[in-house]
Image (cartoon, rainbow, N blue to C red; front, side, top):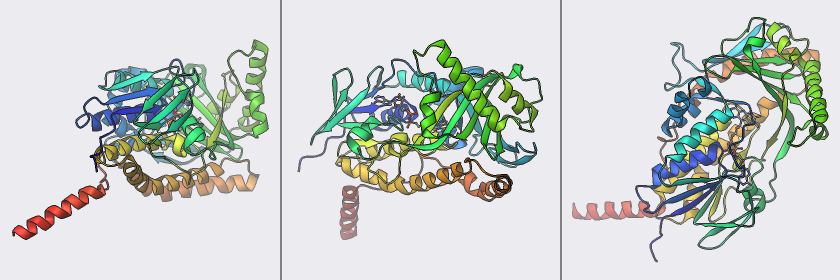
Length: 448
Ligand SMILES: Cc1cc2nc3c(=O)[nH]c(=O)nc-3n(C[C@H](O)[C@H](O)[C@H](O)COP(=O)(O)OP(=O)(O)OC[C@H]3O[C@@H](n4cnc5c(N)ncnc54)[C@H](O)[C@@H]3O)c2cc1C
């Protein structure tokens, strides 16, 4: 049998967290072995998207961003590079009392494996990732290319773009998020994204515009029986507070509240005041003065419906694989971005190790390593999000109590997970290597 040539021409769809992380990790892992390596990322937007608000990065996410060179880039951005988060403090909106906290530091005030949490605007993270990608060997990012379909052949995969053009590759990696075209057009057409029944209502508020004392150090989750509300600084100078409410919203209401380019002024104003009313109705009676003030403010709230992708479906074909939200979008939690980064690093390491094997073996090894972790994480996210549906008075009080117990009981498990390092965990060995190893062992035993 002819020796298998390592993949040389790789196409990644989507320049989000998974896509750029994958390009960086693949360049590092494969460059030493693959002369002429070419990694092209196709992104549907013409420029980086400025929407999406702020994102929380856990210690694992920060470690992996540091390994990819992105954390240094974020730090160079100064205040815009995000706010350090030592803990997310939880409060009852009914009484204003603290419920507990999710700590990103140990008892000595040190981060896990050296890293705490960080809340950063999504656009700042994208700019930092893009800056690193631009100076990375073998990587090119092409904007304004929306994938609409694809085909797979024995020796190549072909992507079809909305503008009528095509791209041919040895390997296609779908990192195109929850509504992934790579998934829904050819890897797993029966697995569309599903609306969870919950949405984020989010805005960024000027900290100076709030006159009441701020009740949290860096980040807070404020709990009520009508949903929860996150309030967190998102820049190092603490000039901006990112506020996001998780609220149940029926699917039919979504179009009524959606802001899209091209809408006239009156429509935009109707949507904005409708969202403000929705927030006031739910959280207006909050006992915490600064939250009440935020609810009364004229902030520009935006609605982000939360979608998920049912677990258990297909992640790959023969030359195409899905990573990040495209494979397993779960109701978002602080760890979601970390899962996308883990995927990128683990898959790149496996591909380098299996470079002389058929791609399908690399895919199998990756799935074996990853599937159980992802299924478990998905279940945990669902359980967490269940707490955000509307509740009665007594159930709401029970929720506060059980939340305290839940956070406390999961502390050890959570902290152990934050020590995870995708660059270090042992990988499976290709079957042919095992054969070579055992042949060597037999030969050496014979000579002894
Ligand atoms: C409201 C909200 C808040 C969240 N908050 C947090 C948080 O605080 N912490 C956390 O860890 N996670 C959070 N998450 C989850 C986190 O954002 C995702 O898990 C993460 O962004 C997944 O990265 P990804 O690269 O797989 O997908 P994405 O970030 O969605 O990137 C996909 C990319 O593919 C592009 N694309 C899509 N379709 C095509 C196409 N057809 N052709 C070409 N390109 C395409 C998109 O434009 C985009 O750039 C949140 C999610 C939401 C919705």
